[in-house]
Amino acid sequence: MHVDVIDPKKTAMIVVDMQNDFVASGAAMETPAARQIVPKIAEALRVCRDVGIKIIYTAHVHRRDGCDMGLFDDLHPPIANRDALVDGTPGVEIYADLTPAAGEHVIKKHRYSGFFGTDLDIILREWGVDTVIISGTTTENCCHATARDAMFRNYRVVFLSDATATYDYPDRGFGSMPAAEVHHAAIVILAASTAHVMSVDDMKNRISSHSATVAGAATH
Image 1 (cartoon, helix red, strand yellow):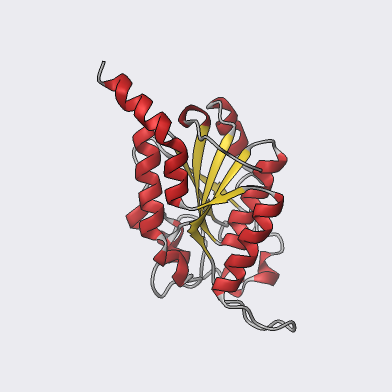
Image 2 (cartoon, rainbow, N blue to C red):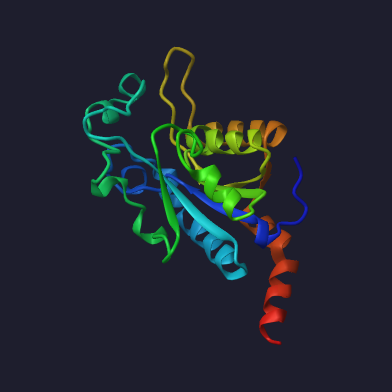
């Protein structure tokens, strides 16, 4: 997939799961690299807002009684123990430095993909969106799943290589992997199969002509 030009009128930026339970220091599911990319996501948000690209957030949450838990009880102990991602708690709120602006929506989801069991697709189609920009955490799980589901639904996908991040993987019988390697593997796979992977700076360059048009129109 190749995205030469990003049209602000037909593009939305999705900020995936930049919640306190993942981003805040000492959180139950802390992903330190996610905190490190906060400035890059904030930069991307400023650029998108300036040119009229719509912003939408996702937040991974579960009800305290576990009725929407599925197999996460078997996969992630902090979720199983209700130490993280419990709907209605401060941990599921968007990290303060990336707080949604007035009118920007937060989609609650119960699986990795922002599209699974949510109204994200309905909203994007109502907006006339055909291209999505993916940022957030984690690269290989929720960002990857959301990008794949977007592509399956015929959205063009821009995946921000320096505004996505993940964590170190422990040895589960096949060796461990540091976060940098997991991230690298994920973006290589996505670039080959799903998305146009690019940096925030590259994203800015691809919408610069539209920025100038918007700015010029505003002066007349």
